[in-house]
Amino acid sequence: MKCLMCKQSDPRPGLTTVALERGEFSLVLKNVPALICPQCGEAYTDEATATRILESANELEDAGLQVVVRSFVPKRI
Ligand SMILES: [Zn+2]
Image 1 (cartoon, rainbow, N blue to C red):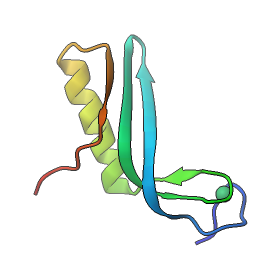
Image 2 (image 1 turned 120 degrees about the vertical axis):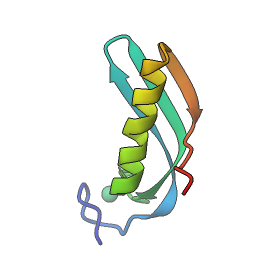
Image 3 (image 1 turned 135 degrees about the vertical axis):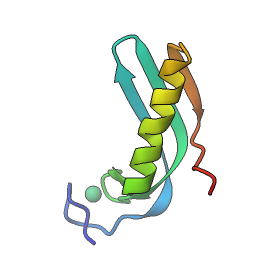
């Protein structure tokens, strides 16, 4: 699969940082597994990971936190 942004390189497995903001709530998740383009740095997370990011955001926002920086924790099966 060629990168959709630069259409030059094949994204490779790696880790990225995802930042998300919702009003007063800010979340920075580090070490998120993704396919990363070596050319332009665009990161592609799969659907399960994207879902888990949103779940984490919901949990932390519900807990009343405002600014959170933490490592991504994949769901345990
Ligand atoms: Zn690219």
